[in-house]
Image (cartoon, rainbow, N blue to C red; front, side, top):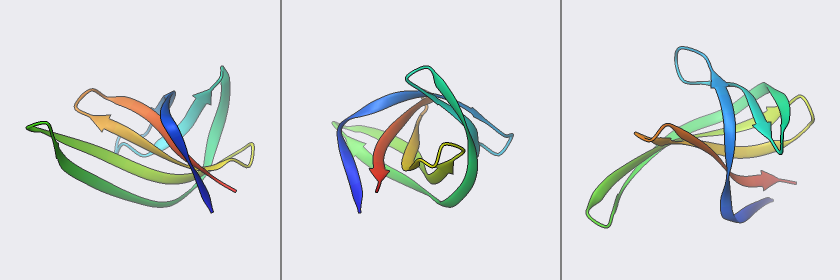
Length: 84
C-alpha cells in the first residue's frame, strides 16, 4: 500500500538522456535508483493551464520504494508517495 504525501516533497534528481531518474537526494541524502518498476505520463488542465507530469515508481539503494514525478515544463522533481 502507498502512503500519499499530503504535500509533495521537492527532490534533487539526476537523470539519463531519456529523462529516467538515476539518483535522488532527499533530506540531503543521495540515493541511487536501483530499479524503475514503471513510468507514466499524466497531462491535465489546471486552472486553464495544461500541466504535464512524468511519473516513475522506483526503488532506491536505501530500499525506498516510491513514486516520484517531474513537473513539466518547470523541470522540478517531487516525491508524491511512499510504498510500504
